[in-house]
Image 1 (tube, rainbow over the protein chains, first blue to last red):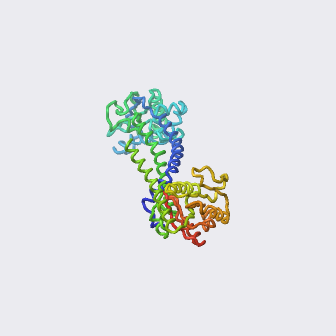
Image 2 (cartoon, each protein chain N blue to C red):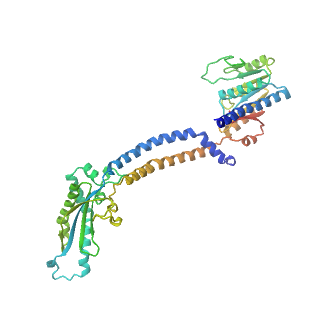
Image 3 (tube, each protein chain N blue to C red):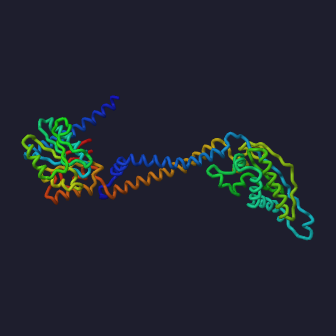
Length: 279
Length: 175
């Protein structure tokens, strides 16, 4: 039968089963729609498009060598220069994130924290908060070619930013300082600034060092993009995929058990065609 | 609006013309060899759908001045039996589970009163009696619808008929 199967037959299969395809699409649109609705609502909950600014708390530490500990030991300049990197590594470690996680969630409720930070990504559930996510609300980095470490915390609430910074500082005092014996940190005054999302932490518009690069983005357009991407990934792509599978199945069935779709199909059987009635 | 009407009119006139064409073919067959008892069966259409088509065909034939008797030889199981039911020309007979002898008697009774007798019978691959009905008729014509007629069913129908010594005389295709 395959010699009789052509594009016209494929078109006929689609035409004959158009209502089946439509019903199939409607059913799965409803099913996938409900599934993606949950993700969309979660996105809308976490996005903060009406907030125009973020509070960033910052503290600067200067790494100071401890002269007594270095007595009798020959330490070269490179070792001394690498000490700030050690501090940064300790502060950015999972242990520190865990410490902050435990302390922060013991002070504030989960909902409050999620509402006032970008702790979870738009397509994540609240249960997905983990240590890695915590790292988005604070950051330690070394200022280039200096012995200065900058520590930042971010939140949509001033008080929360201050609390995160306070917990970070406690960790530095309890853990970081004790782990590194050849240097100490000299702390500067804590500063809390209200900044725009596209500005850097100094308050200047600098896309290279902007807050958006630190996973903080609360613009309306990004929220809309997230919603659209959820709908496309969770609704349209599966729906189109399943529809294509259904069509392929119908075509395959039609190929295996074909119908007679044209006059020439009847001519093979030596039975004269008396006429064609249009119904 | 006129544009749409144009297309609608064309499709209606095409439908009428298609029926007329087939009606003329049947009339010419009758005039050529005098055989007046035609049976219509299908591997793809239900008996009701087949009856509807043949009834329309009969109306076009009767417009040519011929008297037509239409017989539906076997009703679908759930329908009520009726004889000479509500048809415009009152020349439709419906019977349930006739034997071939009973059908033959009915045909013989009405043979002289009508110019053409059109008998709609169920599919030979569904109803065993359908083969017996076709033996009563002078000519057997298949009515098949595009997109709904499977190769397997059509071949099976032809095989059943040929094994009973009946060669279909033609096929009417339905779009």
